[in-house]
Image (cartoon, rainbow, N blue to C red; front, side, top):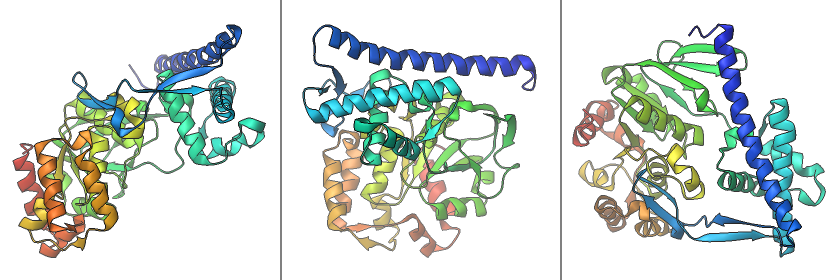
Length: 376
């Protein structure tokens, strides 16, 4: 179908309207639940999965970590609980009457300020409004993108042999993620469901934690030599970044690897991509890529290549010990690597490979690790 035709534009508009109507029914259904509880003489309440590490359960079907059976109750029996349910209804009403009705959107930060006019339902910190949006996702089964709520920060970027079509409010546009963009890469939008993959020559996806290493791989032509789609994670990856990695992997069958610093916080970056994050485990089946493999920096790399290091801090040590009890790091591989790091007491950044030469990471380290993992 011609993407510029009226027929195609109507199809896109109808799909968006369908999503909006479904989301509206979910939110109004929540309000009806509270009303029915009032009508039956019950204190309004809602049950939710406990969002803790102890409540993570492995799903054999989807191969990701999701919430288990432990539940917590949000109830109006207390003043604090009543305020939380009032905020829940207020946010639901705002999304339905403003976002969905008028086809508008707000950032997470704007939502916090918008609540200033809500009286007793106002938020006292953005962390409260952010968490409530996550709660609404869990309760309704709808992603925050369906609420027309978007993050404040810019998206991450990617660079590689991929032709895609992005739907925007100004129409569709075709973009090749090597030929049509600068060295900064293609900026990933907050809602990647508006992207259609048209063609690719990629043999792998490499998700890279730091901007310096991302730029090094582009400068050294790693994307061209190995037909790699490079994704800059910008630290802890945004939801849209994790979602597009999953889509590229599951829809196009492109294997994915994750390349981070060698410290406990970076291992958690990998786990959020491969297994799902604790606070968003309700979206793991939507965003996590269980086939994604960790490429490094490994603690064993620190020893093997004698990389420049920093001493583990007390916070690093506590984080590593916590990961030893984290079900996402329960494999033999991770226990060996984490215990080795505790033993040597060192951590290393990706840029430490530069001490072996500017081309070492692209000519030696990555090809060796990709062979070990069976990617090349």
